[in-house]
Length: 160
Image (cartoon, rainbow, N blue to C red; front, top):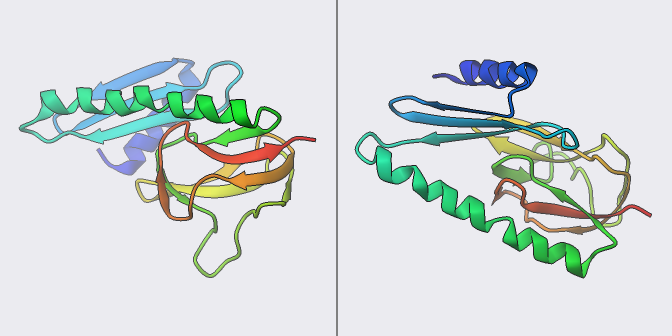
């Protein structure tokens, strides 16, 4: 399955209204979850499954995903007045559009809804992450060129 087929599948699932679709083939396992009513966007997990270890490889990704929500839950209690911008996908976090360009945002930057905050690379595709809130960047929680998980906090924004 090539990237064009995966992109077509994601678009199809998003338009169909299904909340989750799982597709397993010999060497690829794909899970697509669309956002709920209050949450925009899609989440796509693609896992390359080794042919010999197809059965043991499936439970391993579920464990880190289950542990991930515990960490973000602790952060908002400390900074309850701030809004946490979280990663909508798994990939590599970049603060600039390219190495020779300036950073999208810095601590203290004022942002509006729709402003690009960062780029996350997933499977050689660079996904611009746009702000869903207006405010001021208080803290950047991830280093440039670091791997990020789904729902991992990226920025703290002061909405006032």
